[in-house]
Image (cartoon, rainbow over all chains, first blue to last red; front, side, top):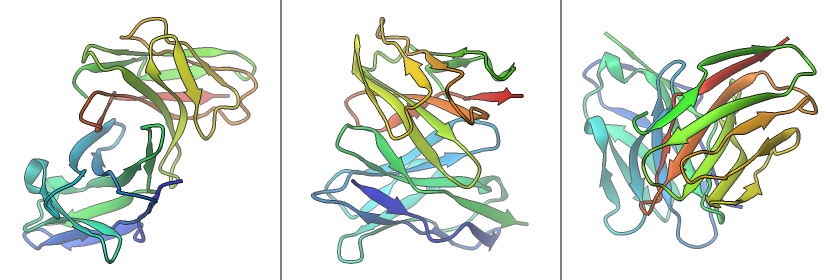
Length: 112
Length: 111
């Protein structure tokens, strides 16, 4: 089965600094990769996806992600973090039945 | 959360009772999904449906049942056979673009 791993339970960054939330994947074939964000007691919001094409994918709210085939990674990045970016972030990969397999999530805390 | 509604937002039930969670979408999506979220475990797939009148079990289907009689609706029943039903339940749908769009969730507490 296709799977992703998020090695960090929590990431702390100061406002204005760049942020990275890590994700590695394990798939057979070409991966369909996604990032989602979740605010407390809310559903997940789609940020961006990689299907094919450019390795740098731009998404919502100034986020981007870099697909790296050799390192099997799909890290989420933002050049300048905002306090309002504090949330739970999930990486996901599409499985054979078109459902998504999610990582366990990374809690991002941006401090003023 | 736009386009997908889940109700109610909070649900309380006694142990041994079946309970049905509602999920409706107006995005004209063919596929719909139910996930369960527990702290520190991410989301786990319960059931999914790619077309009306058809659905498949996900990773943790035991103790749950679904129906898909209309394209817009995909209700989830948590039965008394589910050993640990207290959780946050999320419904999603997807169209041609592969990404899934999620509802606001239902927090179920069983005592």
